[in-house]
Length: 432
Image (cartoon, rainbow, N blue to C red; front, side, top):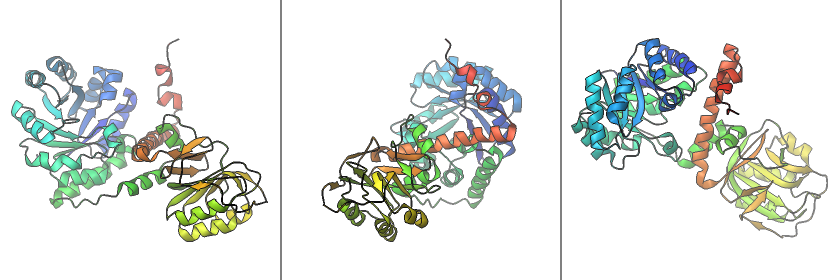
């Protein structure tokens, strides 16, 4: 195989939209169209028929077959699939039956290595059984926890004598890295199909993989630290995106931005104090580091525990923002500084520094539990708390929500459609 193959995964639910998006992707340089598992489950074999009929290019059916290999491959092949994707986890007898059916009906088999414990060993076994392609694939839920196909791709490629595909959260940069590591096929899903401009996004990936192929050298992959990646993604998404990613989780109650239009992302340094006692809140400035957010829980909100001078101290230290379940004063000065501060109440009077309370303990702020090190995201919609042990996963899921909304927004604005029409709302309503 010479020039690398760019395959787009149509992991959608609505066939009409999938056909439309497939055409836009082909205009951007996509070679192969994959009818994704969600689309097959939603629309059945008709999805394969319609995609193949509409464009006539090489079409894949991601059946994820793990049993009844002959039957499922026959179904897909008769519906127009040139390549049928089955699971490498399948028993060898299922693989053998799938290959026999593929040969009978003129299709090929791609074996997906998702969830295989020893992908290099299994890849060799699958090749010996007679599959036509291998797919080094990290699934969506695995991607959310930081898994990456680049981690195992080169070893599979070095031991394979058949074409190898790579899939799993690929964007233009990662797709190019996969080609540099020896992949023959790159499979891109949401970074193309959920884009507002599918054609341009496909072109971006196409140009990146072609450039990597022409250069023909191993990729020098610069990996961001997990914390850098979490911060980068959270700066890109909104608090509504995060709420959706957390199954409609609620924001802090009655906590409002003092300065509109300022977004804040950082790790929590927590403070528990009493109404008007600002000693621990100020001491927390010395505890917090660059990029952190101070989160304060007060016992009341009749006297301020924060003001302009504390805010200026935070600016000097590079502290990202402050969230207060209590009262703040000097709001005109803080607004003039443009500092991102979220609070429950604005008052003119301060209390006294008595020194009660604690720093970096579990607190409840705005009705939401916050632990030291949890990620805080605040914008004009409110303040969300992301547990530190799930931060990367939730950030990635929020990014998928954002991509999905951007595509829908484009269809509303550019094509004059309604939301109910786009998502086929009435079709999916529960039958009463």
